[in-house]
Image (tube, rainbow, N blue to C red; front, side):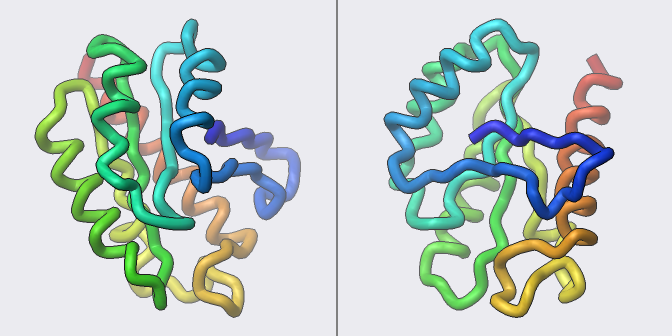
Length: 142
């Protein structure tokens, strides 16, 4: 769940976690980030979200900024419904922000390995920069 990034290391080794058991992971993420200013979640690449975003937002409370990252996983049935859920949720809930990886990565085949899903070095850099830019914009405006 947590993005661990050290710019001095190879970003293809960034750990993005997993969402295959989302609710058990949400509790762990809540505990890990309980003292943090904001939380970034990249959920939904491995399966449907099943409308779990309300639970996530409620667990973190209304005051903590939450950033949700859209997905790009071509050839699977859940890419569109998960992204639609993320778009709608970030519009509907206060203090919840969009990192639109789907839009950022559009037309950038060089961001992806041969499977079209996993990221190359350049893709990892673009992914992390997209998150940093979205967070910086929110915190600049506060």
